[in-house]
Length: 313
Image (cartoon, rainbow, N blue to C red; front, top):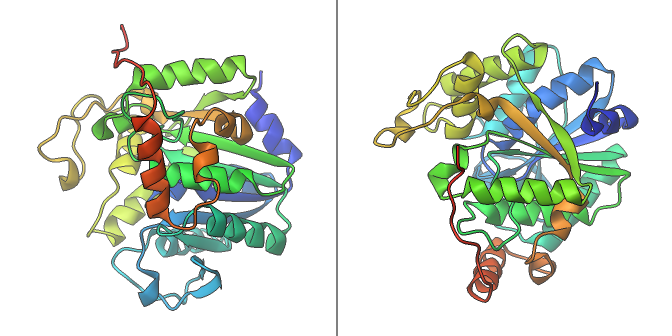
């Protein structure tokens, strides 16, 4: 038995794995990176980033897009650089790019196109920690979807053979007011649209699962100023923790619900998801992220939002 997502991966040769929502999203792509590398595929990485690039000495390859390498400045917050270091410690070398979280769809699309051309990419895999990227726009709560939407709509306009999405951490975005009843309804809609490519679990015994857990530990040790809530929640779930299991001080004062669903990857056709985004056309020609945020807010003000419902389990 196999799922269409892995068939699509088998059909590609040169991949770009990109984190859509900023911060640590690219960490969710590392298990896929490790899987592809064992298949002998060429893999480049990128991430929408909150890093302060004016302090990094990184080469700017296009407006708001930077090439990260091991010679980049050693900042307390710089997940892209630390991921490169970790990969290098395992004998892996990958090109890593980072996008400013201030640019809109048009410059971000140009940055994606530049990387695709440089590395002759045939397959894009956008990755998200959490599931708030699976937003159509009329949900009762949409989490931190602005950066995700900008990345997805920008990447969907780049000419490649395949554009895919993978997200891990179902339930984590409850912390950001995502309604998971609406999330499951969206997945059902995408199944009807033939845009759903299947789901799979990351386990602690897999080569890729062990790598993910090692990377999360490495980032926790080296980026003590800001631990990732999402990656630590997924790691806790993979280890078999349950309920209000606290790892980072960033979640103190809140009650977590760590559970096995958080280790599950959901996968989709990127164009299929973008076609369901009601605000996609409105933000298509933006140049700054602030524009994206304002236009999504405007869309929601003028839309009839779904009722907030609980999952009846």
